[in-house]
Length: 111
Image (tube, rainbow, N blue to C red; front, side, top):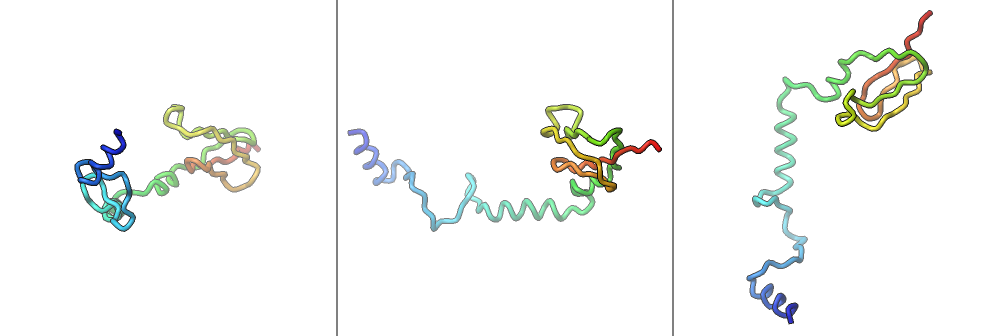
């Protein structure tokens, strides 16, 4: 009984249909096309050349010297702000990079 009533109300346009119309473009709750929203957001971020990108900022941090052959990177001293712990092997001569945050580590040789 209730399902017949719901179907009748949907047909009469009182209740909106739950079916998706694939031919209509995707929009936000405000009716703006999502393609324009994403494009404008990216364009707005990219046009401000006075700010450095995250990769430029992390590359300004000098490599961290570590005693021993293994570094443990958590991204931050506060665990709530960091990332999962990554143990990084420092046997190579060039700095090893954390795959989560981009910090670089080198082995501190005491010769």
